[in-house]
Image 1: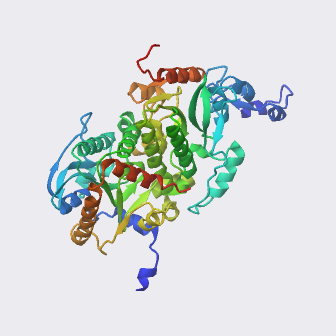
Image 2: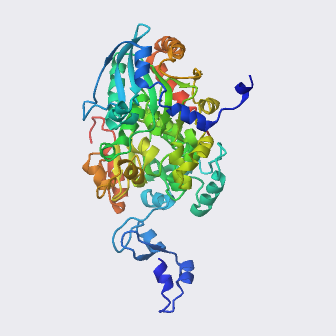
Image 3: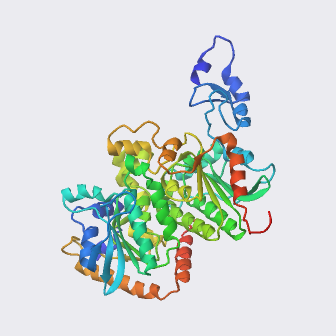
Length: 281
Length: 269
């Protein structure tokens, strides 16, 4: 984005312009896009079709029926239990920059009139890392879905377990697995949607426990991060390694769905899970 | 007397947990169980030597044993990939756990790994999926599961064998979300800060007990090697056997609910 600010030849003060209409640079084609334009276009670059990082609430708006969303555990927020250096400072910083209280937004909504429990992770809050609050919000939502016989959808985006909460973060993987197991035992549907990036402890737990696992195109999905792997194996990683397209080729996910088709696909899948009791259709 | 009061330093414990002469998985199989017979392979791709599986008796009770094994000599360490399992390891453990469930045979998991292996093949064959499946299956496995952390409890790769009914840590073992080196590299871009980070991560058996995440700690001898492990093994064996007698009497549904509630209670919030 810098180059346009430096270009004074056309007399436009882009800094000022940006204050009025924020601009984002596409990481794929490098062109500048008005943030508002991107937002109304499902956060897709109008030039090259690249998916921009999407805010949790924008995604809710895109996926759920208008006005159907009721947020749960809205005010739940993390505390520095381990007295980990700078953690409180970091939490405050991300609260401010993202406008969120934590890295996941949970609630109940409807997709084409079908009621669902839904969680959407937001990588803009501490890389979507999972600490005790993220774990608890997902457990609590899943328990609600189990009790009320609702299908569950989780949009994953995470750098993994949150280091600053140590082993307490790690335990959330077990807790989410148990809650999802109970949901599953009741014959209820869980759809996991992997968005960029989904790694670490989230991949090694609920991201990969869906009855159906979908992914957005080009999303980085893996257990270990690419840098760690590169340092371990001391060789260059293959092209497209750990991207959605690589995972589908290796049989690890069910399908790759374009963002603009996501609501329709989820709606379709929910419809296909309407119980058939043998009566007249 | 005075030394008893001094709080042990987390980094010293990390070093002890990783010490070269510390007993490893195979030593516990030899010292604790009788009539061990190894069962290999995941029936899908291969046999991961970083994780030993098999059947044995413990004080006459038939059990399934799943042990992460770091190896002793350098040659052996290389051959078992330093105890870092690929997805095949976790799929072997899952296969043997399901088999144990069928015969209602208790499962004993011995945990000792720096973490699941971060490699190209491991990712392509679904390292995350394999661990996630282990956690999901253990959540409702209808047979008692007892886990012991004997050295390093490294992240998801260790957690995959820890979702059971009873979790024991040896005094100088660790259980952590990430290695201190990994954490220091990410936070400070400086692995040499690992020593300091280790203190913040709260990864010692005392820390875990303080959080209520483990059920017991077993004291280690001062010089802890495979030649001095017999007393510890007797204590460990006694505790496991008592636990098996208690758990095996439970109705399987009750056993599962008890396990689920135990872990769900570890909210940390």
